[in-house]
Image 1 (tube, one colour):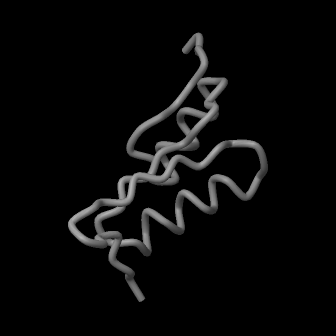
Image 2 (cartoon, helix red, strand yellow):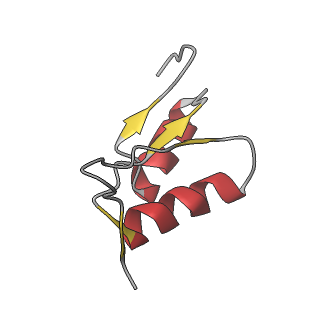
Image 3 (cartoon, rainbow, N blue to C red):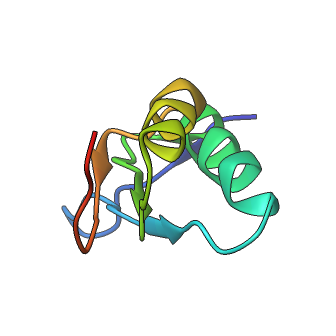
Length: 68
């Protein structure tokens, strides 16, 4: 069942911090189940995390710095 991210005209834009193995699953779940959500990955530290985040459905990244 897809849920809506809209509440009073707002769009959800969560950033899921990549601190555990569950982070990519959370990104995938939000991207797949919350209609209108713009989900991102936070604390992206490597090219591998960048690729994995994009494959999971992340639409933006937050990083302190990366050499990709």
